[in-house]
Length: 384
Image 1 (cartoon, helix red, strand yellow):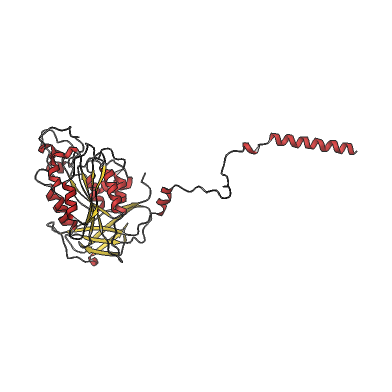
Image 2 (cartoon, rainbow, N blue to C red; image 1 turned 180 degrees about the vertical axis):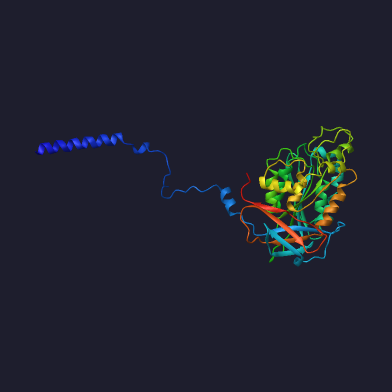
């Protein structure tokens, strides 16, 4: 009997061994999440995802320009005269000023060979920037761009240094990395202190002197404008005209791109002369504000012929085109006068959603006036 039990026990061991051989071996187990070994580092989410989740807007600042029916700026308003809404929700103004906050300005200048015939005029603008734009308490930095982006002068309150740098600028290559240069300027301005209810600060200004042409940038215009809005940077631009440069040039240069050269985005109508008036009539149906909002929401480079106007509109600034009878000096003087005569309004958003496009609306309790301010800002991933 004991022999029978021993034989059965032996048979059971054989069957158990066969079952183990037929089952899945540990080395052949399908791949899957594995617990980390003691002391090993746990994989973290990508840094850009973490940054996106932490984005919050603690302060929104917008320049506000108020004009009467004749176009003259109005300077006798107080904070109580303004109403500010963010996505339709009323906001409390935490900082209010009329032209008094000192400026931090990045002067962004095209140094491309394509505008070499008006370079002598550009080199003479240093004193205007020092006196009319910077003012007594401002500071400025200078960035030049063509096929490369070059920081020519760091932030300084020395007007003579600004004049010397601009007068000594040299022509570069034929390219025009406008959007890359704007991105560099925005990054530089984010280091400058902003005004709040508790502390004084500076208004951040990006002043662009360029054609409306970008060639070779890796940066998208919409991304630049998003960052500028979130950093409370206002963009002003003077549109240099390639057509004007060609008319003034004594030597024939490389053929000028038809679309978009400087202030003109289209060729002239057959049998007509291209002028600012004719272009205004042709482009009268274009809503630059809608283009600005679209560019920020979608972060694309589809806006080309009106890139400078869109950049200025999206941030509450203004674009001034130059052509024949409108000199570069006059355009700089016009913008400088506005910079020191406009209202600066700040608020901390409350009661608003944390993602998507936020529409800013500002009104004043005075009839018959026009109000210009930045249209909004964007938080979150790009719209599909």
